Image (tube, rainbow, N blue to C red; front, side):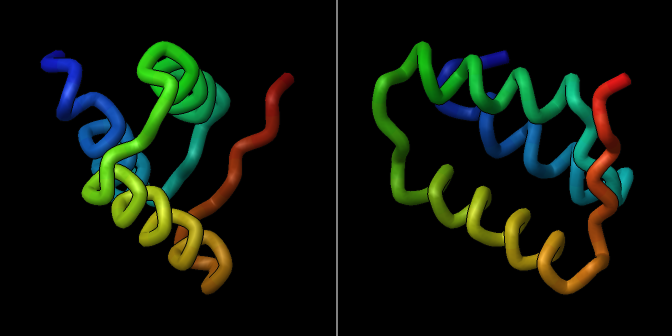
Length: 64
């Protein structure tokens, strides 16, 4: 994946499956750590994911 699209692709994956799995969450966190910053577009994508989770439309899958 291209570096500038990773977070948005991961958020899109979570939105598509309507689930935030530990794997997706870990990949997002790793990418944020690697980049050391977040673009406005990635911030908006993460904000949308959080809004969907707050509304109950995205299920948070716990780690085993």
